[in-house]
Image (cartoon, rainbow, N blue to C red; front, top):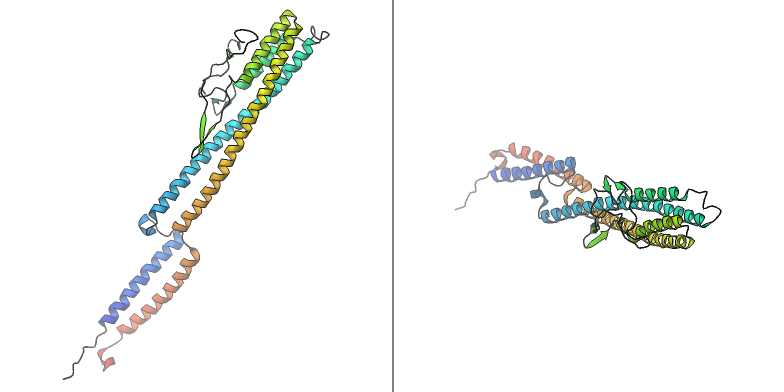
Length: 304
């Protein structure tokens, strides 16, 4: 006895409808990717790349913070460098005044005491330079004038010996974390021996002037010249730190841009690939609807 199977379009109908639904879902997803520029609007859509994405974003954020902090440090150091340029000019002027004072024909006609004190006030003013409301030469004590100016800048306790009697900043330096495991001291303190020699040389010159002692004036010039040499070393250190921070920021920027590119590969839509796939899915969807319509028109008699 032959077995007669029941002919039906149900299975074909179900398969076709399933294919249409899947293709519609793909089309909607691709349209969303193309309109938003993102592969997904939540972590769930990153399919196993969530950890990589979050780690890269954390690295980008940390690197950006380093760049911003370093930029502030560079600006502080550049302002410090500008003040040092002025201080070097003041030191040169002080030396010139002392040389002129040793000339017997100029000694009584140059108002030496008034001029040298004016230079001392100018030196104090430069050492009290601020950046964004914070004093640059006071170490970690950035809210107080590093150099006393009221009622006047005091000289050394003992003329001819170096001290920082004029200084009221801290004895601690500011340190900047420029990168992982890279710390840079990015300040110059007004109690640096270079400045002590300038103030000490001025005090010694005033004594030599009062006593009309050429020997003391010569000692004062020697002290000023030592201070000038130290100033050059201080400025060289500042310039080195500026270059170091700039190099660090160049490296940070390169890494940040690289990591940003990787995150975009993870999260951003591949426009060409998505557009191509969308065109394919739309063609498949159109064909599926045509097939679905054809199936709907089939009758049992079509099989008999």
